[in-house]
Length: 312
Image: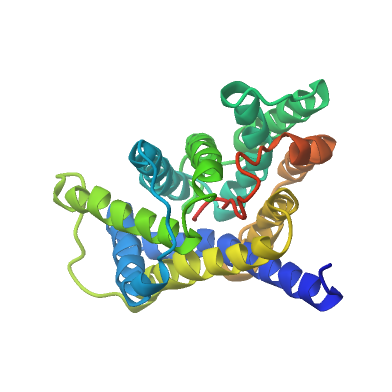
């Protein structure tokens, strides 16, 4: 029986992880002010990979089975590779607050993905909530006006939605892998694959390499690599190791709230009245099927201890 203290420590760890993930949207905005998105994403992956080199000794205890390599590669291609491609474009074109709001749809999308790919039972209530959240997210983008920091919010919100599609594929695949692989190993694997994947983007003609070092954007990249890719996942994995993963997934819905607050405090972002209403629809859709989400997200193996939200 878990002690009250252990449960509170788990809750605090999960909340801190969500705050860190929410802050990643702000850090990306700051980094993109001076550096090309592909430079930022590669730098983030490289910093995380270098950090993980110091923890390779703790990545043991993995039980490889024939055929697992395709799942490992699919996981990494979904996130960080394609996930960050779309998220980078999203942050370029929309506000951090709106991008963070779209992440509230992830638990719903995981439930729908489990129904389609893992043949899990999903009720009409879940699909109704998913449809409501889609309407809210679409309204959120259409109600946004272009600005200096959000030149094309509708396109940016669509890119963030696509990032959630790949985050869903990542989460469902991770469910299978965490039964046999150390969570630290899986996170390190993502970082190393991401570094290799994004390295060629530095030499693409459309990528602008930095001419000089800018302190705030550079510190933002370091922050993204260490505190988000490593720290947020560490806190999340610790919390979810103490409580059921299905319960921990509900904490993902805190990310939009924290993102809106941080966007207002750090970047001075504001929502219009229509966007507040649209955000309410997103939350209503998530709330409508929250209990069913918990029942629908499958634990492929009873020994599985963790699943991870987007590594923003």
